[in-house]
Image 1 (cartoon, rainbow, N blue to C red):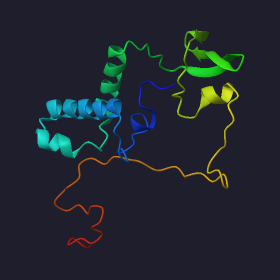
Image 2 (tube, rainbow, N blue to C red; image 1 turned 30 degrees about the vertical axis):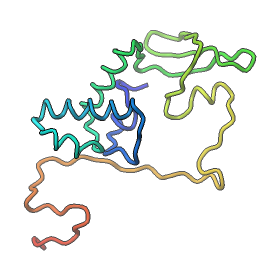
Image 3 (cartoon, rainbow, N blue to C red; image 1 turned 120 degrees about the vertical axis):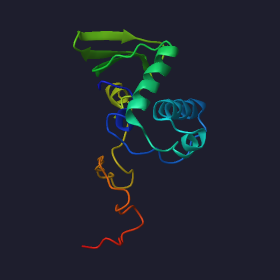
Image 4 (cartoon, rainbow, N blue to C red; image 1 turned 60 degrees about the vertical axis):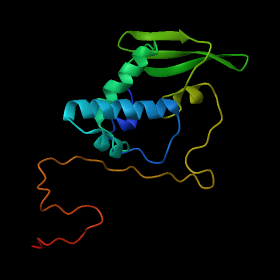
Length: 166
């Protein structure tokens, strides 16, 4: 339901990828995104390899669009799942709504990539919210970008002391 693919990683301006992945698709996405950065920012190959966990939002959006186009995927932006079509406990399609109105998408397979499990919810799949033991959830994280930083005077993570005390 956004104007781009990637969810929190792109539209939510997530700062970096955590953890590790050996997924061929994930590794391809990282490499293509950072090659795009290398080409436009003049990065060396060494610099590209060092930056695989940082998310460059614009380049990531373009890379995801390219990968979907190459795979023949038709992406519907600003589209919400309103309901599902389930027959004999088999998910056969989804009912969606967007600027074109309400529509039906029938499918042999449905992948729920809504981020919130909207398709699974509408299909009646059992779920729990939060941690199974007590329902507690991780609080929201505040992300922001700052420009015009004087790097010679800046205090970076892990260095809470500065020679420029006021």
